[in-house]
Image: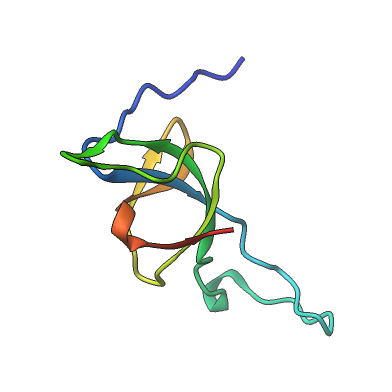
Length: 93
């Protein structure tokens, strides 16, 4: 039985679960972990309420694109997640 996370981001912060990095190229070449690029796509796990007069526009379950060096890596319940400002999110896809 998994335990639901009780972490709630504040203000305009968003918690994102990064998508898994590709392990093979289109040509079938296997890429070692040390050479993989960080994914720039993920799923919103939780979002704060936003700033005064500026509500957050993403919601849990949205798939988003974010900047290459966006966010701070955290671990909650054994999952590797990122916490970032909503302004670090480039697009909802």
